[in-house]
Length: 315
Image (cartoon, rainbow, N blue to C red; front, side):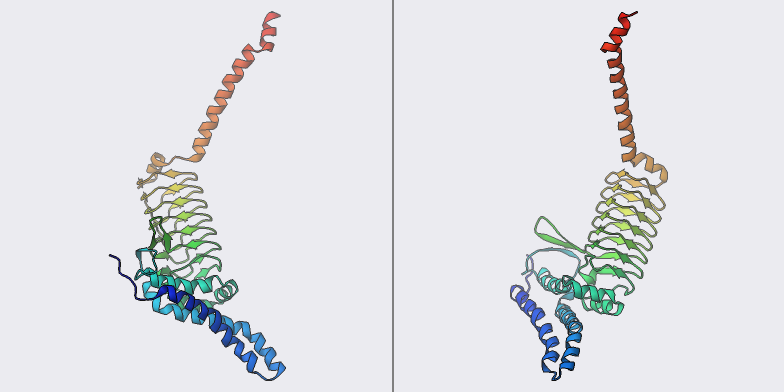
């Protein structure tokens, strides 16, 4: 039977929201109210948004700290009474209060020192020298392992958790190697591990617990299904599909439009011809068949039509 948390999570949620809404505003407005001269008030008003942002993020980070230990790998029911999910809910509330406060979040993520303060305050343990777009989705910062130079582009999703239809949430870490790039709108599922200097192109979907080696390239609009293992120096062409739990060895090149089936093991480049079903080739074969049908019908029409009959009658 699942253990329950002693925390009154349902009660603490509105309490945290009131603290986040009231305390930063009151503390940052206080200097404006107490300074005596108009000039001092003007200065206080200019400082107000900076002071408010710092206090707001600081309070959110401090409120989240007791719950960092609940950001762990596993599968948990989405119930606030659960001993892991309950504290996760409070951590998520604190992080969401900053993440969805776009001007404040953008400002902090744009300045390296403030970015480091923000990330560390919510339990991030990876390298500080990383580039995270302000609209890239991140959460569960203690489970992010990003190495120096990692780049996550706009509207990408670093998905350390995923809600399941059975009422549970699956949580796992995500690792990005040194100088690895994750493209615009790309989605990474829980448990992904991508090596150094690899590139995941625009609009890709990388499934649960996918492993990609060093210096590999996944071209745009490609799907890599759950549990697949892709070696180092691999190139996967545009709009390809890599099946569930398939394995691709180091140095393999997969053409665009390829369909690697579930459980396939590609050890050599010669194996590619056996497994790959190129969409380009399918289209070409279909086009050839259609052209043959068209020519056959055209021949029948021209050999039996009115013009052909009139020509035969004149002979």
